[in-house]
Image (cartoon, rainbow, N blue to C red; front, side, top):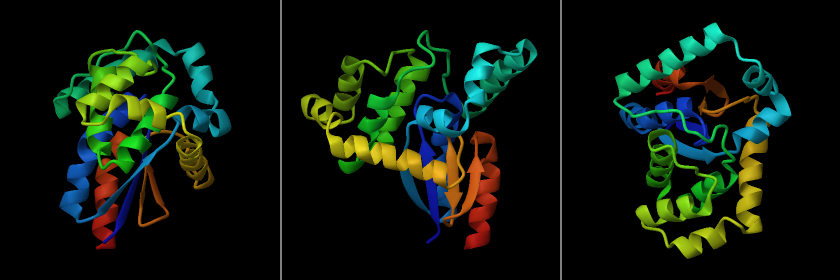
Amino acid sequence: MTRLEFFFDCSSPWTYLAFHKIEELAEEAGAELIWRPILVGGVFNAVNQEVYEARANPNPRRARYQAKDLADWARLYELQIGWPDVFPVNSVKAMRGALVAQDAGRLPSYARATFERYWGAGEDISQQEVLASIAEEVGLDPGDFLEAIATPSIKDRLRANTDELIERGGFGSPTMFVGGNDMFFGNDRLPLVRAALDRHV
């Protein structure tokens, strides 16, 4: 079974789009889907600081088109995606939470709820009370969850995933690898991911 690794951070709307389709794509292709939570801010700080420059000095034409593009994709996928008041958001606790949810076998549900709370409802996922509510929604004990996201082992694992993505050539979220070293970046590359999986069968 071909491995499909999905490196992701819930703070990205384009990642929300890809997340919405990646399970279906993996199932159709008969691939093993490997969830890899990361901190995309750590990636940007290390290898893609141009993102910050673009945010500080946006190109109005490009910004208008990107807003339209995002709305078009959301409509196609039948997702509600708005622009939260808090952006960019500090997603470190949310993404540590993804690892806690992964250990409990609840990662897809947790990530989906986190995406929906942030990009759908506009809630601030950097806040512990929001994360506790998400944890409870997906069947995790909120107190245990908040305690776990502060443990050194969870912090180290998120850092290790982030560092690994950088070492393997990644520069943002979502990044996908097919068969170990065939890298794809972005929601719009999902057809290429599917084609790569078909080649590996």
